[in-house]
Length: 191
Image 1: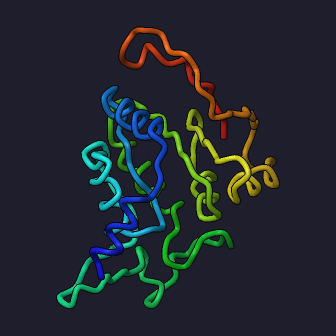
Image 2: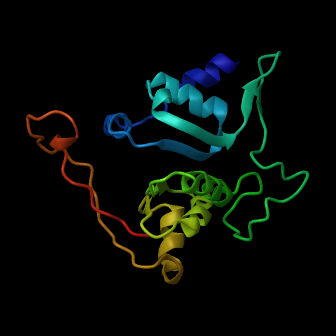
């Protein structure tokens, strides 16, 4: 039943620091967008459960909805049954090239007066293509030990200068201050 699927999705673990990071970035004025090979039902269920849906201005994913019989229907982002999305990277699944999505986002950002920096976070094979589309001043933050990390490391000639920072999930004392000034400065990770 669709209710059972929703119950399982609501149990999907998200570290509390990630939830707070999303809320803080949104509160600071960052325009957060999702580019995911999941589907709208999964993503919206999880975001709503954690009170994060309003933090994102855009969700780019496979359309999914519950039909009249209560069944979850998921369709491809790019309808590969009609034509290929045209990407030549073997890491892109046929249903969604995240690189094409990033190019569309970049095109919409180029219409604005001020240059925006894109910081792309990813971990899967399908996250490699969009990292190749990033421009000067943009960043990629791959999840170490996951497929996109290996692809980036194995294709470092295409990626430019790489910086590696080992981050460990540790408890750290925070100053009494509230807001973003309480957190240490982020380290840039060049693409």
